[in-house]
Image (cartoon, rainbow, N blue to C red; front, side, top):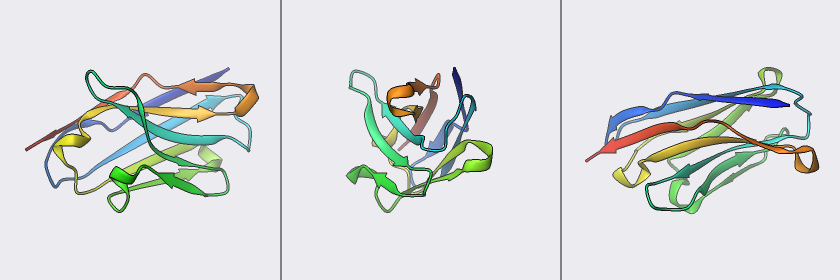
Length: 116
């Protein structure tokens, strides 16, 4: 089993920054892909960014150049640095741990609200 816990959400003004953290514990394997997704009210959950254990990253077009994903493999932790935040970034942000056929795990989510 894998436990996933996010932290770092909050309220920020447009143009501001926030840093999200996600710690995974339990049966974590080296090939795990970790990532962030977000879901705004009334909308589907969408990819924000993912990162492999080797550091390969993938970003949604809407956040490229503003958000940076990173991870600490020794701590099984992934981070999302969010800069130049916009009101449309407002959503619940979820951390995902993808171990392929061994399972995919989600955190409980953390609210990010960007005021205009």
